[in-house]
Image 1 (cartoon, rainbow, N blue to C red):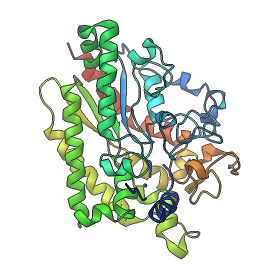
Image 2 (image 1 turned 30 degrees about the vertical axis):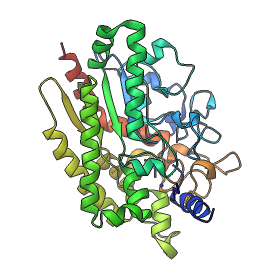
Image 3 (image 1 turned 180 degrees about the vertical axis):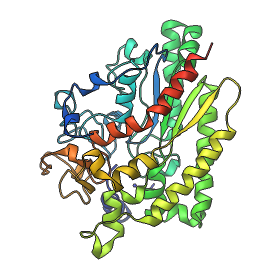
Length: 380
């Protein structure tokens, strides 16, 4: 089966196009301190048992290391600002927003990948990420680069439950799951890579509004499946202004790709429309004893782009790695030139945010995190 063309939010779209053609013919500078997570003020009397994460490369801490895919980043310069400068498989120079979240609620310092075979029972019990870089709600999105579909991520979670039940029993596992925070972050690849840059979905869903409805159906089913597995508090992230991804600007600006570099507004408009529809869907999905809430990603990211000085950024349209125009994953490698101050850049590569951006995003969504903690405390 041929899998042509792909975001992250991930090899850049350009790399995917090249791969597909081959197949067809054949916050600020202080954030770089590796101990910075210890300075996060944690909420009082936290009662979150674990954090479970699903989605794409924005929340993949290294699951793609353990599968056969080109969408990997377990090599330098990725991870250069992570603890001990280790390239863990996170698509950034350091921590992800979920790492800051886990530290904030006092569970652990980092959220590990579920597929890591070395994880202890204690690590498993306090939560893991099932996310996979280059994935999306649309199964075809994950197939483009042979990564883990959302359906497979759900299967892994069910497998996880069985493993924990075998260790601590069904009742304790049920309690652990009910007191856990569930985080979903996906959707950008579906639009920026799949729909807008391959012909397959546009043949079936001629209007982007039709594709949006298709994705929302996939989101709805995934949330229902989590509820059936015992999830009680579920946070669903919207999509960012993906028209502002450096690689999108490069590819869609044509001869104007170098200067001046501006966001592709038509793409970001689609993101805003989708986020509104997603918020409406989530409001309709709540049932007694379960809280499903929207996490705003778009506005914090958009604010960083348009008021960068407020966040200490000097560059918001190009990545830190290589030229900053198209490099990501394999194209951002040990031979790539890296900028001197990643914390001054909003993007690490042409697709993925820097640790500094993730920290700023974490600070922006803290009210949503505190809301989730409050909901978990109220669960009997």
